[in-house]
Image (cartoon, rainbow, N blue to C red):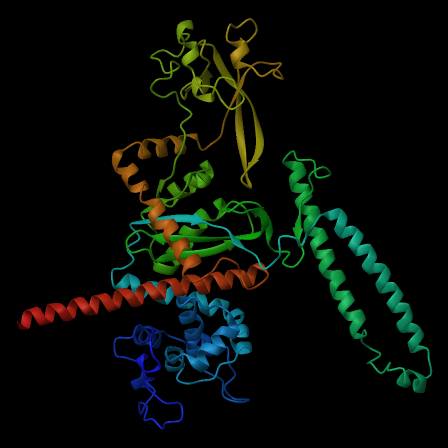
Length: 535
């Protein structure tokens, strides 16, 4: 059992007078990363930010560099809340040193976070170009991917069009009742109205009615989105009466999506395109959609605008391998890498034969692949480009029949339909034809088949497979860092425009932290080389 005099004494008595460092700068060690963080930001051009201030009126404002520094440094330290940032600027020495002792309150942080969307993009661009000038960004290969981040909306605060219509009817009835009461109060004598507290401006709605009117507008907005979502479901073959769309009511811009950890909730889909050399984010965006395919080529265009050049190779997953995207990448002269399935017969498929006019031998029929419906797959049919027709496994010609439009991933494409006229009595009819087929087997072909085949050939090389195997490391490491280190698992802001700005703050802080570490490593290496040279 330890005695009372065993324990270590306190290094300082609370009542004892002490001599602290004479300057704020002396409180931060010379090798503290916050110094390099501040040095990088001091070299940024802030004129775009400064243009948002009126320098001729009112109390002088805090320079935007220091407020932005507090937000970005806070993200790097996992501090996102405006109130936590205010607290850090008051008690944490690194924050106090960074903002030079300025007392920045949470309201300033909160308003600043959403006000400077366009200047923030310029800051993202400047940091990216500094990294590129140091050889940290090369754009030899980039990886494009999206993730799920929860919206600022409870998973239980969602409604269908039916429930929203019922809610709107209740609000309309309540509004009419309160309006009648307000008119009755207006008809009273002025003295009586004053006694009863009805002294509001008669040209404006009373506060209670104004709040109710705002709620009605929110419900109407959500109802319009719910009806639009139901219409999309109807076009996709889903009965909206049996399976109606759920619309978030707190943040109507978000969308109910499946969560990676299971279940459904209002989410957004943040997107990041990451450079393969040192893992810098070279483009960021947010969509309120389940699939980010529509942003793939737009990301390439934004990268060219930011860095003055396009990436050489573009890596993405199988969810973004549509023919439309592949063709757009070829038009931009960007090599596209993603898993793509060929529609041509491959090795091991008996349909791959020297003469497609000849039938596949009966003993090899069982080896021909089938599709998800259990019928012979499209890869069992051989396309003849010269004749513009297919040949079925029995060698029969399938000439062009008609064209039909179709929407794929939000893109309208034209399909060419090829039909076989020799299906009656065919021994493969049961394995080939759908029970609903009445005019023979059809094969469709869009205008992207040749682009797909070129991608298949590119992906077949060992070099391409080795490069593509790096995609998870490049793309998914970014999201892991942003979520686990910065804590961006749920957005703080509501509405797609504000959420986009919040994601840009996270991407900018991510790149800034990487740049600071890289510069610190370069200086340490240079210092070691200098010492070795002197020795």
